[in-house]
Image 1 (cartoon, rainbow, N blue to C red):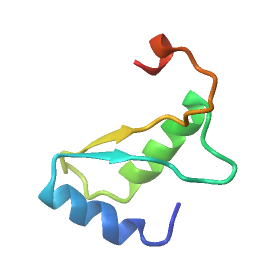
Image 2: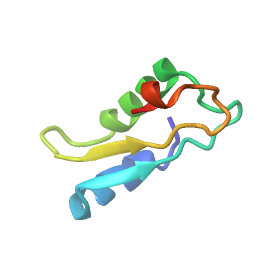
Image 3: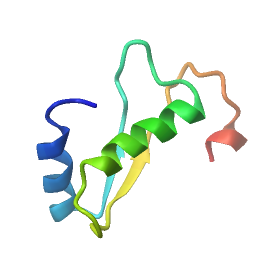
Image 4: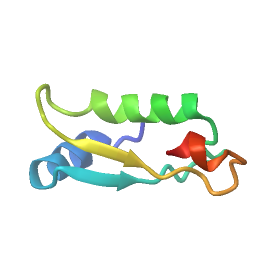
Length: 70
């Protein structure tokens, strides 16, 4: 988890219902399981009952099919 997330994500969720999140990490997030864990870290810093949809942009070089990404 990134140290500024507890400040950033709750504030974003108060003002917006959705956000596109692109995990720019090294090494990159390339597997669905990694994306789900990344999403879980974001959920962990949000207050309970806060409605916020995290849309995660997949890594372009992941080699996944379009059907899996949808």
